Image (cartoon, one colour):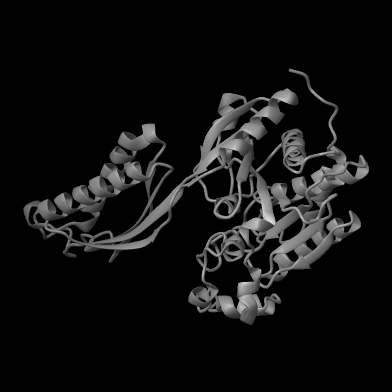
Length: 418
Protein backbone atom coordinates (compact mmCIF):
# COMPACT_ATOMS: atom_id res chain seq x y z
CA UNK A 1 0.00 0.00 0.00
CA UNK A 2 1.60 3.27 -1.13
CA UNK A 3 0.36 6.81 -0.86
CA UNK A 4 0.51 9.33 -3.70
CA UNK A 5 1.43 13.00 -3.83
CA UNK A 6 -1.83 14.90 -3.19
CA UNK A 7 -3.35 16.58 -6.22
CA UNK A 8 -5.96 18.57 -4.32
CA UNK A 9 -4.97 22.16 -3.48
CA UNK A 10 -5.90 22.28 0.21
CA UNK A 11 -5.36 26.03 0.46
CA UNK A 12 -7.74 26.71 -2.44
CA UNK A 13 -10.26 24.29 -0.93
CA UNK A 14 -10.18 26.20 2.36
CA UNK A 15 -10.59 29.49 0.52
CA UNK A 16 -13.69 28.19 -1.28
CA UNK A 17 -15.27 27.29 2.05
CA UNK A 18 -14.34 30.55 3.77
CA UNK A 19 -15.59 32.58 0.79
CA UNK A 20 -19.05 30.97 1.06
CA UNK A 21 -19.27 31.18 4.86
CA UNK A 22 -20.58 34.80 5.13
CA UNK A 23 -23.58 34.11 2.89
CA UNK A 24 -26.64 33.67 5.06
CA UNK A 25 -24.61 33.98 8.27
CA UNK A 26 -26.81 34.68 11.30
CA UNK A 27 -25.95 37.09 14.15
CA UNK A 28 -26.77 34.37 16.68
CA UNK A 29 -24.56 31.84 14.88
CA UNK A 30 -24.89 29.42 12.00
CA UNK A 31 -26.15 30.05 8.48
CA UNK A 32 -29.63 30.14 6.96
CA UNK A 33 -29.76 29.44 3.24
CA UNK A 34 -33.22 28.10 2.48
CA UNK A 35 -34.30 26.73 -0.88
CA UNK A 36 -35.13 29.28 -3.59
CA UNK A 37 -33.97 32.25 -1.52
CA UNK A 38 -31.53 35.03 -2.36
CA UNK A 39 -28.91 33.28 -0.21
CA UNK A 40 -29.07 30.09 -2.26
CA UNK A 41 -28.80 32.14 -5.46
CA UNK A 42 -25.77 34.03 -4.09
CA UNK A 43 -24.05 30.73 -3.37
CA UNK A 44 -24.86 29.53 -6.88
CA UNK A 45 -23.41 32.69 -8.38
CA UNK A 46 -20.07 32.24 -6.62
CA UNK A 47 -19.90 28.54 -7.51
CA UNK A 48 -20.83 29.29 -11.13
CA UNK A 49 -18.03 31.87 -11.37
CA UNK A 50 -15.43 29.39 -10.06
CA UNK A 51 -16.59 26.67 -12.43
CA UNK A 52 -16.58 29.07 -15.38
CA UNK A 53 -13.00 30.12 -14.54
CA UNK A 54 -12.02 26.44 -14.71
CA UNK A 55 -13.46 26.15 -18.21
CA UNK A 56 -16.86 24.68 -17.44
CA UNK A 57 -19.95 25.23 -19.57
CA UNK A 58 -22.33 26.41 -16.83
CA UNK A 59 -26.11 26.49 -16.91
CA UNK A 60 -29.15 26.09 -14.69
CA UNK A 61 -31.86 23.56 -15.50
CA UNK A 62 -35.58 24.47 -15.26
CA UNK A 63 -35.85 23.70 -11.52
CA UNK A 64 -32.66 25.66 -10.80
CA UNK A 65 -30.00 22.97 -10.39
CA UNK A 66 -26.59 24.41 -11.32
CA UNK A 67 -24.74 22.20 -13.82
CA UNK A 68 -21.21 22.69 -15.14
CA UNK A 69 -19.92 20.43 -17.91
CA UNK A 70 -16.26 19.79 -18.69
CA UNK A 71 -15.43 18.06 -21.98
CA UNK A 72 -13.67 14.74 -22.23
CA UNK A 73 -11.74 13.21 -25.12
CA UNK A 74 -14.98 11.66 -26.36
CA UNK A 75 -17.97 13.84 -25.56
CA UNK A 76 -20.36 11.28 -26.98
CA UNK A 77 -19.68 9.17 -23.89
CA UNK A 78 -21.85 9.52 -20.76
CA UNK A 79 -20.60 11.92 -18.08
CA UNK A 80 -19.19 11.20 -14.66
CA UNK A 81 -20.94 13.69 -12.37
CA UNK A 82 -19.88 15.02 -8.98
CA UNK A 83 -21.89 17.20 -6.63
CA UNK A 84 -24.09 17.92 -3.64
CA UNK A 85 -26.25 20.84 -2.44
CA UNK A 86 -25.82 24.45 -1.31
CA UNK A 87 -28.93 25.15 0.78
CA UNK A 88 -29.08 24.70 4.56
CA UNK A 89 -31.49 24.25 7.41
CA UNK A 90 -32.25 27.36 9.52
CA UNK A 91 -29.14 28.17 11.57
CA UNK A 92 -27.27 25.27 10.07
CA UNK A 93 -23.55 24.77 9.68
CA UNK A 94 -20.97 25.70 7.04
CA UNK A 95 -20.22 22.14 5.89
CA UNK A 96 -23.46 20.22 5.23
CA UNK A 97 -23.74 20.03 1.44
CA UNK A 98 -21.15 22.75 0.88
CA UNK A 99 -18.14 20.44 1.25
CA UNK A 100 -19.50 18.14 -1.45
CA UNK A 101 -19.78 21.01 -3.92
CA UNK A 102 -16.41 22.61 -3.15
CA UNK A 103 -14.69 19.19 -3.14
CA UNK A 104 -16.06 18.63 -6.64
CA UNK A 105 -14.74 22.05 -7.71
CA UNK A 106 -11.36 21.25 -6.12
CA UNK A 107 -11.26 17.97 -8.04
CA UNK A 108 -11.88 19.78 -11.33
CA UNK A 109 -9.26 22.37 -10.36
CA UNK A 110 -6.71 19.58 -9.82
CA UNK A 111 -7.51 18.07 -13.21
CA UNK A 112 -7.04 21.46 -14.92
CA UNK A 113 -3.88 22.40 -13.00
CA UNK A 114 -2.21 19.04 -13.64
CA UNK A 115 -3.28 18.91 -17.31
CA UNK A 116 -5.09 15.61 -16.86
CA UNK A 117 -7.42 14.30 -19.51
CA UNK A 118 -10.35 11.89 -19.25
CA UNK A 119 -12.18 9.98 -21.96
CA UNK A 120 -15.58 10.72 -20.44
CA UNK A 121 -16.84 14.25 -19.88
CA UNK A 122 -17.25 15.42 -16.29
CA UNK A 123 -20.06 17.37 -14.65
CA UNK A 124 -20.39 19.26 -11.39
CA UNK A 125 -23.94 19.57 -10.08
CA UNK A 126 -25.12 21.82 -7.25
CA UNK A 127 -28.66 20.70 -6.47
CA UNK A 128 -31.33 23.11 -5.25
CA UNK A 129 -33.57 22.47 -2.27
CA UNK A 130 -31.95 19.40 -0.71
CA UNK A 131 -33.20 20.32 2.76
CA UNK A 132 -36.89 19.96 3.60
CA UNK A 133 -36.84 22.96 5.95
CA UNK A 134 -38.79 25.42 3.81
CA UNK A 135 -41.49 23.40 2.04
CA UNK A 136 -41.29 19.96 3.66
CA UNK A 137 -39.89 18.29 0.50
CA UNK A 138 -36.33 16.97 0.79
CA UNK A 139 -33.89 16.53 -2.13
CA UNK A 140 -36.21 18.52 -4.39
CA UNK A 141 -33.71 19.32 -7.15
CA UNK A 142 -32.43 15.77 -7.54
CA UNK A 143 -35.97 14.38 -7.38
CA UNK A 144 -36.97 16.57 -10.33
CA UNK A 145 -33.74 15.73 -12.21
CA UNK A 146 -34.31 11.98 -11.84
CA UNK A 147 -38.06 11.97 -12.38
CA UNK A 148 -38.81 10.95 -8.78
CA UNK A 149 -40.95 13.99 -8.00
CA UNK A 150 -43.95 15.87 -9.31
CA UNK A 151 -43.54 19.64 -9.13
CA UNK A 152 -47.18 20.23 -10.07
CA UNK A 153 -48.26 18.15 -7.07
CA UNK A 154 -45.98 20.15 -4.74
CA UNK A 155 -46.38 23.60 -6.28
CA UNK A 156 -48.95 24.93 -3.79
CA UNK A 157 -47.06 23.86 -0.68
CA UNK A 158 -46.41 26.91 1.53
CA UNK A 159 -43.51 27.95 3.73
CA UNK A 160 -43.91 29.50 7.17
CA UNK A 161 -44.58 32.90 5.59
CA UNK A 162 -47.34 31.60 3.32
CA UNK A 163 -45.21 31.75 0.15
CA UNK A 164 -45.96 28.85 -2.18
CA UNK A 165 -43.26 26.66 -3.65
CA UNK A 166 -44.46 27.75 -7.09
CA UNK A 167 -44.03 31.44 -6.24
CA UNK A 168 -40.63 30.92 -4.62
CA UNK A 169 -39.33 28.87 -7.54
CA UNK A 170 -40.57 31.47 -10.03
CA UNK A 171 -38.87 34.25 -8.06
CA UNK A 172 -35.65 32.23 -8.19
CA UNK A 173 -35.88 31.98 -11.98
CA UNK A 174 -37.24 28.45 -12.37
CA UNK A 175 -39.00 27.68 -15.65
CA UNK A 176 -42.33 26.53 -14.21
CA UNK A 177 -43.80 25.40 -17.50
CA UNK A 178 -40.77 23.35 -18.48
CA UNK A 179 -40.12 21.01 -15.57
CA UNK A 180 -40.00 17.95 -17.84
CA UNK A 181 -36.84 19.36 -19.45
CA UNK A 182 -35.03 19.12 -16.11
CA UNK A 183 -35.26 15.33 -16.19
CA UNK A 184 -32.03 13.59 -17.17
CA UNK A 185 -31.87 10.25 -18.97
CA UNK A 186 -29.87 7.31 -17.57
CA UNK A 187 -27.75 7.18 -20.72
CA UNK A 188 -26.45 10.70 -20.01
CA UNK A 189 -24.43 9.48 -17.01
CA UNK A 190 -21.79 6.86 -16.41
CA UNK A 191 -21.79 7.51 -12.67
CA UNK A 192 -22.54 10.03 -9.93
CA UNK A 193 -20.37 10.67 -6.86
CA UNK A 194 -21.23 12.72 -3.78
CA UNK A 195 -18.99 13.67 -0.88
CA UNK A 196 -20.72 14.67 2.37
CA UNK A 197 -20.00 15.07 6.05
CA UNK A 198 -21.19 12.00 7.94
CA UNK A 199 -23.59 13.92 10.23
CA UNK A 200 -22.91 11.30 12.89
CA UNK A 201 -19.90 10.09 14.86
CA UNK A 202 -19.29 6.56 13.59
CA UNK A 203 -16.13 7.55 11.69
CA UNK A 204 -14.84 9.65 14.57
CA UNK A 205 -15.38 6.83 17.08
CA UNK A 206 -13.72 4.35 14.70
CA UNK A 207 -10.82 6.78 14.07
CA UNK A 208 -11.39 6.30 10.34
CA UNK A 209 -11.04 8.92 7.63
CA UNK A 210 -13.48 7.82 4.91
CA UNK A 211 -16.92 6.27 5.07
CA UNK A 212 -17.83 4.23 1.99
CA UNK A 213 -21.62 4.28 1.99
CA UNK A 214 -23.32 1.03 1.02
CA UNK A 215 -26.97 2.09 1.32
CA UNK A 216 -29.11 5.10 2.16
CA UNK A 217 -31.79 4.56 4.76
CA UNK A 218 -35.37 5.51 3.97
CA UNK A 219 -37.65 7.33 6.40
CA UNK A 220 -41.20 6.24 7.14
CA UNK A 221 -43.00 9.00 9.02
CA UNK A 222 -46.24 8.92 11.00
CA UNK A 223 -48.37 11.52 12.72
CA UNK A 224 -50.09 9.93 15.72
CA UNK A 225 -52.83 11.48 17.83
CA UNK A 226 -53.81 9.95 21.17
CA UNK A 227 -57.14 11.23 22.50
CA UNK A 228 -58.13 10.75 26.12
CA UNK A 229 -60.04 13.09 28.40
CA UNK A 230 -58.98 16.38 29.92
CA UNK A 231 -60.03 16.52 33.58
CA UNK A 232 -59.13 18.44 36.73
CA UNK A 233 -55.87 17.09 38.08
CA UNK A 234 -56.96 17.47 41.70
CA UNK A 235 -60.50 16.16 41.65
CA UNK A 236 -60.15 13.16 39.31
CA UNK A 237 -59.17 9.91 41.07
CA UNK A 238 -56.36 7.90 39.48
CA UNK A 239 -58.76 5.06 38.63
CA UNK A 240 -60.99 7.36 36.58
CA UNK A 241 -58.33 9.02 34.48
CA UNK A 242 -57.86 8.77 30.71
CA UNK A 243 -54.47 10.48 30.62
CA UNK A 244 -53.27 10.82 27.03
CA UNK A 245 -49.78 11.89 28.09
CA UNK A 246 -49.28 8.88 30.36
CA UNK A 247 -50.30 6.66 27.44
CA UNK A 248 -47.92 8.56 25.15
CA UNK A 249 -45.07 8.11 27.61
CA UNK A 250 -45.61 4.37 27.63
CA UNK A 251 -45.81 4.38 23.84
CA UNK A 252 -42.57 6.36 23.45
CA UNK A 253 -40.71 3.81 25.55
CA UNK A 254 -42.22 1.04 23.42
CA UNK A 255 -40.90 2.78 20.27
CA UNK A 256 -37.44 2.89 21.80
CA UNK A 257 -37.65 -0.78 22.81
CA UNK A 258 -38.59 -1.89 19.31
CA UNK A 259 -35.85 0.29 17.86
CA UNK A 260 -33.33 -1.59 20.00
CA UNK A 261 -34.77 -4.94 18.89
CA UNK A 262 -34.26 -4.05 15.22
CA UNK A 263 -30.93 -2.26 15.73
CA UNK A 264 -28.87 -5.29 14.58
CA UNK A 265 -30.47 -4.68 11.17
CA UNK A 266 -29.37 -1.01 11.35
CA UNK A 267 -32.91 0.26 11.81
CA UNK A 268 -33.89 3.05 14.18
CA UNK A 269 -37.16 4.42 15.57
CA UNK A 270 -37.68 7.85 17.09
CA UNK A 271 -40.50 9.96 18.49
CA UNK A 272 -39.20 13.39 17.56
CA UNK A 273 -42.15 15.68 18.27
CA UNK A 274 -44.74 15.78 21.03
CA UNK A 275 -47.49 18.33 21.68
CA UNK A 276 -50.11 18.04 24.41
CA UNK A 277 -53.45 19.70 25.02
CA UNK A 278 -54.65 21.64 26.89
CA UNK A 279 -51.16 22.06 28.36
CA UNK A 280 -51.97 23.33 31.86
CA UNK A 281 -50.27 22.08 35.01
CA UNK A 282 -53.58 21.43 36.79
CA UNK A 283 -55.28 19.63 33.88
CA UNK A 284 -54.88 15.98 32.91
CA UNK A 285 -53.71 15.99 29.27
CA UNK A 286 -56.62 15.09 27.04
CA UNK A 287 -54.76 14.86 23.73
CA UNK A 288 -51.20 14.24 22.59
CA UNK A 289 -49.85 14.54 19.06
CA UNK A 290 -46.60 12.73 18.23
CA UNK A 291 -44.27 12.54 15.24
CA UNK A 292 -42.77 9.09 14.63
CA UNK A 293 -39.73 8.59 12.40
CA UNK A 294 -38.65 5.05 11.42
CA UNK A 295 -35.54 4.57 9.29
CA UNK A 296 -33.53 1.67 7.97
CA UNK A 297 -31.87 0.03 5.00
CA UNK A 298 -33.68 -3.32 5.41
CA UNK A 299 -37.28 -3.21 4.15
CA UNK A 300 -38.31 -6.28 6.16
CA UNK A 301 -36.92 -4.72 9.34
CA UNK A 302 -38.80 -1.48 8.69
CA UNK A 303 -42.05 -3.41 8.23
CA UNK A 304 -41.47 -5.35 11.45
CA UNK A 305 -40.91 -2.08 13.27
CA UNK A 306 -44.09 -0.56 11.90
CA UNK A 307 -46.16 -3.61 12.81
CA UNK A 308 -44.74 -4.01 16.32
CA UNK A 309 -45.08 -0.31 17.13
CA UNK A 310 -48.66 -0.20 15.83
CA UNK A 311 -49.60 -3.25 17.88
CA UNK A 312 -48.19 -1.71 21.04
CA UNK A 313 -49.97 1.57 20.30
CA UNK A 314 -53.36 -0.14 20.04
CA UNK A 315 -52.75 -2.30 23.11
CA UNK A 316 -51.68 0.68 25.23
CA UNK A 317 -54.63 2.76 24.07
CA UNK A 318 -57.15 -0.03 24.62
CA UNK A 319 -55.89 -0.69 28.13
CA UNK A 320 -55.92 3.02 29.02
CA UNK A 321 -59.18 3.85 27.20
CA UNK A 322 -57.42 6.19 24.79
CA UNK A 323 -58.47 6.65 21.16
CA UNK A 324 -55.58 6.55 18.64
CA UNK A 325 -55.48 8.16 15.21
CA UNK A 326 -52.69 7.33 12.75
CA UNK A 327 -51.67 9.16 9.60
CA UNK A 328 -48.78 7.93 7.47
CA UNK A 329 -47.00 11.01 6.12
CA UNK A 330 -44.39 9.30 3.94
CA UNK A 331 -42.85 5.92 3.21
CA UNK A 332 -39.71 5.93 1.09
CA UNK A 333 -37.69 2.92 0.01
CA UNK A 334 -34.07 2.27 1.08
CA UNK A 335 -31.52 2.69 -1.70
CA UNK A 336 -28.63 0.28 -2.21
CA UNK A 337 -25.60 1.94 -3.79
CA UNK A 338 -23.55 0.45 -6.62
CA UNK A 339 -21.20 -2.39 -5.65
CA UNK A 340 -18.65 -1.58 -8.36
CA UNK A 341 -18.37 2.04 -7.28
CA UNK A 342 -18.12 0.98 -3.63
CA UNK A 343 -15.22 -1.28 -4.60
CA UNK A 344 -13.62 1.51 -6.66
CA UNK A 345 -13.74 3.93 -3.72
CA UNK A 346 -12.16 1.29 -1.47
CA UNK A 347 -9.42 0.64 -4.03
CA UNK A 348 -8.65 4.35 -4.19
CA UNK A 349 -8.48 4.55 -0.39
CA UNK A 350 -5.96 1.69 -0.34
CA UNK A 351 -3.86 3.33 -3.03
CA UNK A 352 -3.87 6.61 -1.11
CA UNK A 353 -3.19 4.86 2.22
CA UNK A 354 -6.40 6.33 3.62
CA UNK A 355 -8.42 4.36 6.15
CA UNK A 356 -12.01 3.58 5.18
CA UNK A 357 -15.08 1.87 6.55
CA UNK A 358 -18.19 0.52 4.86
CA UNK A 359 -21.30 1.99 6.46
CA UNK A 360 -24.93 2.91 5.75
CA UNK A 361 -26.25 6.46 5.69
CA UNK A 362 -29.05 7.15 8.14
CA UNK A 363 -29.77 10.51 6.50
CA UNK A 364 -31.09 11.11 3.01
CA UNK A 365 -28.90 12.68 0.32
CA UNK A 366 -29.21 13.63 -3.34
CA UNK A 367 -27.18 10.50 -4.11
CA UNK A 368 -30.17 8.31 -3.25
CA UNK A 369 -32.17 9.83 -6.11
CA UNK A 370 -29.28 9.78 -8.59
CA UNK A 371 -28.85 6.07 -7.80
CA UNK A 372 -32.19 5.46 -9.51
CA UNK A 373 -30.81 6.51 -12.89
CA UNK A 374 -27.05 5.84 -12.71
CA UNK A 375 -24.42 3.91 -10.68
CA UNK A 376 -23.80 6.08 -7.63
CA UNK A 377 -21.27 6.38 -4.83
CA UNK A 378 -21.46 8.34 -1.57
CA UNK A 379 -18.30 9.24 0.36
CA UNK A 380 -18.44 10.36 3.99
CA UNK A 381 -15.87 12.36 5.91
CA UNK A 382 -15.96 12.84 9.70
CA UNK A 383 -17.67 15.79 11.36
CA UNK A 384 -16.48 16.70 14.82
CA UNK A 385 -18.61 15.19 17.56
CA UNK A 386 -21.10 14.04 14.95
CA UNK A 387 -22.76 17.47 15.16
CA UNK A 388 -24.69 18.65 12.11
CA UNK A 389 -27.65 20.93 11.27
CA UNK A 390 -26.19 23.10 14.00
CA UNK A 391 -23.97 26.22 14.18
CA UNK A 392 -21.33 24.06 15.90
CA UNK A 393 -21.04 21.79 12.83
CA UNK A 394 -17.35 21.41 11.94
CA UNK A 395 -15.21 19.35 9.59
CA UNK A 396 -11.41 19.54 9.66
CA UNK A 397 -9.82 20.88 6.49
CA UNK A 398 -7.43 17.91 6.43
CA UNK A 399 -10.39 15.51 6.37
CA UNK A 400 -12.15 17.55 3.68
CA UNK A 401 -8.98 17.55 1.56
CA UNK A 402 -8.51 13.79 1.95
CA UNK A 403 -12.15 13.25 1.04
CA UNK A 404 -11.70 15.44 -2.04
CA UNK A 405 -8.60 13.43 -2.96
CA UNK A 406 -10.61 10.20 -2.79
CA UNK A 407 -13.41 11.84 -4.79
CA UNK A 408 -10.94 13.01 -7.45
CA UNK A 409 -9.19 9.67 -7.93
CA UNK A 410 -12.46 7.76 -7.95
CA UNK A 411 -13.78 10.11 -10.63
CA UNK A 412 -10.58 9.70 -12.66
CA UNK A 413 -10.90 5.90 -12.57
CA UNK A 414 -14.55 6.04 -13.61
CA UNK A 415 -13.90 8.63 -16.35
CA UNK A 416 -10.92 6.61 -17.59
CA UNK A 417 -7.89 8.82 -17.18
CA UNK A 418 -5.57 8.69 -20.19
